[in-house]
Length: 430
Image (cartoon, rainbow, N blue to C red):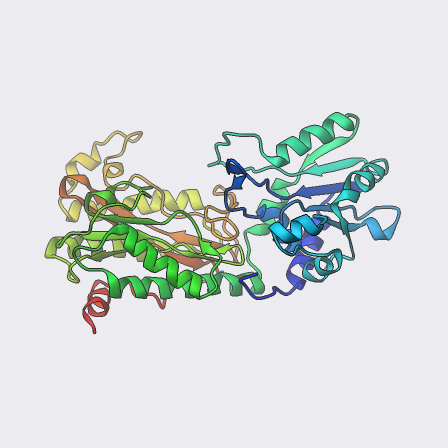
């Protein structure tokens, strides 16, 4: 692994928290993500199912986890099943975890090779009344294919039609929102690596460089600091490209006088940072660019102060709308009179700020969490307002990651340069 060994107490506690909420005489089963074919015999880069990782720490394909706290035999109350290796796998893919190594990583008492899974699972199903099955549930998810979890759930429900089936996701989504000390340490590592990448990019950016070259600088810094990759497809968008919210082609040349928006962050041990900064290609903001930049920064800070325990995320987004409208009026992009009589179902601010302000962050960049529930201390959120003015080829977004507390939120990215003058100073230093 590129990352340091994670304290197995994290996974032990996560499993304990989950099983406490299971119904009596229930079995829960979790499966790893599929390897997805790219072409011929090549596959896309694989990433573990975040729920399975949260409960086990196992970062390897073809893994199963069974949790059965009321199992008649104690040895089957927590069981991992690991891909069985052989000489061919060793030759082509390298070493895989042994069952003993899997027990050390996860803290699970029993582990077997996965060729034993079907026999043991079928045996345990005869003693379970309820079965918890897991799927990729997220209100922003649009699945275009059948996942391993769905295929597995369909098979189990076909083979055992008289059991009572329950969704694991509601329990896991609630548990994954507040971050433990160990998780915050992992997130902080991802943020530290992200900061190093950003500082490297600031020294590199100048007129004539290409967006993909900036991406390469970031990638180098993430990898050399043991990041497990980009937390998401990086956005490096200069000029008019910055007005395209999910621009990822990163193929244009940066020109003097333009701004470049970088929505780029590192992943470490499956935990994700999420940073956005917008900087001047020539090393100095124009008066207009700085005025828009500072407007976004004021909205960012006002929004961040709202991210306290008890706040409802959906309500927060509505509050930020009012703050943003005031800034857009100051910038003469909107007129106060027009705002007063605007169509409430089609508010004017959306022309310049078409997205939300915050989302949950953790094992997924757009992490699980209920935006209609009151925020609890321990949640980590992004704060990312932006203003996009297509007619001026000007797009600015500023994003930090914040830890929700009962009082003032803690900015986990407070040490990353954010003031316009600070960014200019670093870009022009030797």
